[in-house]
Image 1 (cartoon, one colour):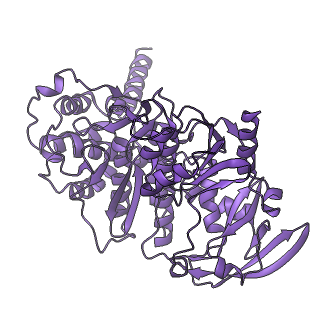
Image 2: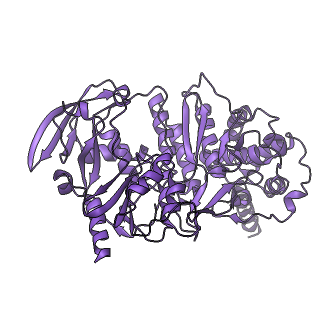
Image 3: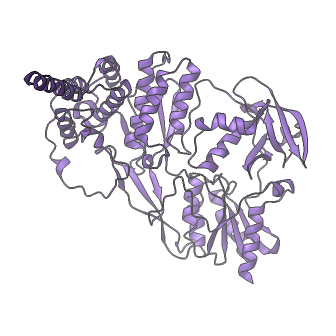
Length: 551
């Protein structure tokens, strides 16, 4: 009987020790390395001031971390590493209450206390680094402009001979990008897939890379996972050949809506209203399913907009696309020529920036209206019974002057969040912005309609938010791109360049513009029949709305 108790005790002890020395997966270990490396890069006083070749430090640690079998061995690697970086002196200012109002939806260092991965000693040491974090000028990041606050990278090695086949170099690029988003992307909290989950996915995918194409596709998927219309990645050396047409996803179909180049389009069999069914033998739905995971965008309409740019294009040297399409219920097949980018750089005929439509309605096209022309444009529409401002485009910096003509008072129109480089991962709320109400500009007092759609992005959305503060403003159209905030461009290695929205833009009441788009009063979407008939149904609705207001 006594022997049985001894055997039971030994079995329990072995089981308990097995739990204490829990085996970690390679993904768990590499995830922890990514987090610790990124945290020390921006927090540790000696690292953040540039005293180490921090990329080399990561490359040296990857094999060591892979060999660790449990959290004790893993934590010892990190503890020894941190001890070798130099003493972390007490930071008096770090403990003082901040005078900044923080927006903390992005901030999360809870991983430091994960006792399944880290020992208590390591967690304590990492928290000590946080409490005494670097307070000087960051070596690896800096503000693009002090007043704006979005970051620019600096002192990142270029790696002109970057070797995609080296698994450790692939991880270096992935870890570098992941940590930039972790600490400096204002909309990280909005991603469809939680950013913590993305880390494990990209580690797994980088391990499966078998070719340069695989590597670029994996990185492109990573960039697309931040769900930001300002994000992009085109593999180095990649070139496109484009069709002369523009297509849009309308009512579940890919529809030709216009031309990139009217001169080239006249030699094409396609025309407005044609419904594209197949390209080079592939159904449109299949092409979309294949390309969608690699296409950036803040919302579905924005992603479909970017997808349509790719439908008729090609990254190889194919000069023609075999297109199957429907027109008036009939099925057709034809070849559509593709052209290099140089064919689309010619200056087109400038359209009217302003005019008076029938029924005495003024119309401003912000794609063409220049800032210096605002006074004369407003004078031209001054006696109209209503005004339509078309922002289904990218304006030319006219919002401040226009706002003065549309609002009788000074109004707040946006709130901003900026990254705090002295507490990476935190974003502080900046001073809200105002527009309108300057007495030197005469005021347009009749009803005004703003037209928007998925082409309304970034500065266009910012412009709409400003003009919406006017006295008699109605916004008509469909969901905008939902990508606002000055762009930060990121050069991670030779030709591996991407970008993000660098600051957070919100309505003054805290309503998010990112991903959601601007506020819309009357939703109107284009229709296939409208395209076929050559009608602009959104503009028509704006005209009818203004007529209703006069009744």
